[in-house]
Length: 377
Image (cartoon, rainbow, N blue to C red; front, side, top):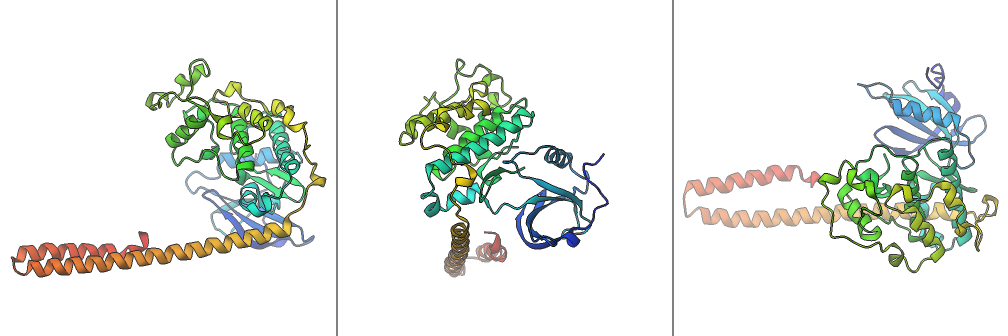
């Protein structure tokens, strides 16, 4: 049985679409306004796979979101059957409460983040842990905790809906398929460090590079510390580097030692050695001064954040334009250099034989074909 009413086909009757705020392989997200109340919502349109039909993972997501209710977990308002709404291959739309910001964008506004009180950042972290603790107590693993999936409004944090590479724990990178909530706790440790560092801690481009970056800071695993790591699927194909010591606290020695003690317990290589959400909530970091602020005590940054986002968007557009101009200049210089080189070569070729001239002609034709596709370079 479907966890929604397929007869509902009234998105345009209920909501006014404002603009698209996200798009991926499996869903598009739109900012919209409820026509009767004026309340802002986010509409997530799930795309239907033409070959396999409606994805089972989306059904699970809908069922879970309908069952769980927590102040720090995004609220699903309703599920609608959308028939040819904006994209023809869209079948189901999820309507959520609208959250104006995510933690990733928030952390990029350094002129604002630098002014945020430690107590408010502690409050954010506490809310994240409370949401994870609630999920784990209901036998739910989030599996995609990252700053981009942590949403912020005027009163605090919400968590949104395989773990993104930068936040992926070592056991998943090594191919483990039997895992529990410990995978979320590694991701939480990465997010907490990023809140103060303002950028991801482990930012590899491939799974092997990600593991290398983890080994560099957290040390290489040993039989004593993590006996099961050699049983992992990818271990046989992995070339372990020279044994490295754990230097996590040394790398971040300028940070609060009590905070780093919490991080040290979260970023343990052995999943069984990591803090649970309950243990993290009981850590002395959240009982010491400054105390974590409650949502109603937090400073609101709405106007300043909007201004910062517009500024970042403008800079991104300028950088994109500059990059395009630099690329065009580079291509023009390359074309001029090629023309000069081939003209000189052809002049030399005239004193030899036709074969030599033909060779240069072929190269010229090849260059011309390459030039016709320059937009891909």
